[in-house]
Length: 352
Image (cartoon, rainbow, N blue to C red; front, side, top):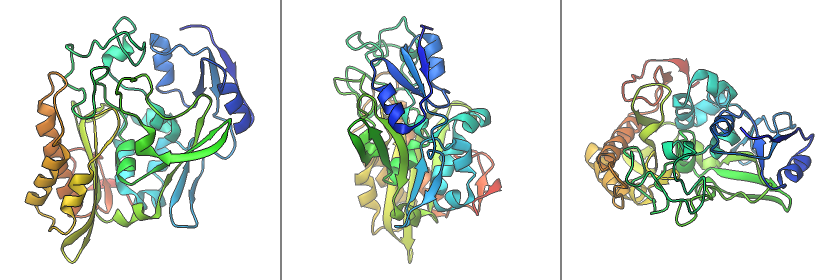
């Protein structure tokens, strides 16, 4: 680990000014950043500690019926917030499926959005990685890549985004609130996270010094609460990142789907919103056949980036099953194994 300066600003304005210096990085819980620093994958020259900034750890219902989630809200606190979990059950389920209880107790909402890929070649400072060292090449191409992207990848990078939390957020049209030296701005989370193209080192839309202040879910997001699930397929049931995941949400009236939402995780450099699949479901009955057709549409543009063709068929099955689970209704209790294919509807934590 290289030597670095450490500063603890007293206000958001001071934090933005401090982080505008070259080589600076924000420090919240550090659950991802510190690992990357220890391994040499990230080498910031200054850490800007934002853990004590006021006003960033609140969950607030907005006048229009939406919800604002401060960037320093802890993942575990948000998932266990009864009002939030009742209104946005798929988001709570995704949160509880990620990492370990200890990490969820420390990790923050803003940090979750900013976490880096878990591609082994990115973590290995001796490997060629365009994300870590632009122009170096991508050792994942032709390497061990069974867990890599099947959508949105390029010859420069085939890594995937690791977040569970972000998958239902993209499905529900979450918005990121940002503060920088030029003032405030906001943008959809789906646009905030970038696909690799020819510049894989640019993973998000933040400009130098900008920081995430809050995340906002619109009023419409809560209208899916009765039929919303997150399903995650992984190598083991706990403390593992998704091979493939899906956030599926439906509004059903008189036996007909009137609105659908779908986002996939583990398949691209950002959660993959499948709008063609959503549109195809509107006006349909909630049947296995309809969900299978939607799954085909969701993966229509998928192609292997290496030894991972199996992920395309796996993703289709995950989408179909996620919609089937959603169609039966959000369970009254959070499953004891949140987001797991092996969970039952008998859980230990009430949504309400």
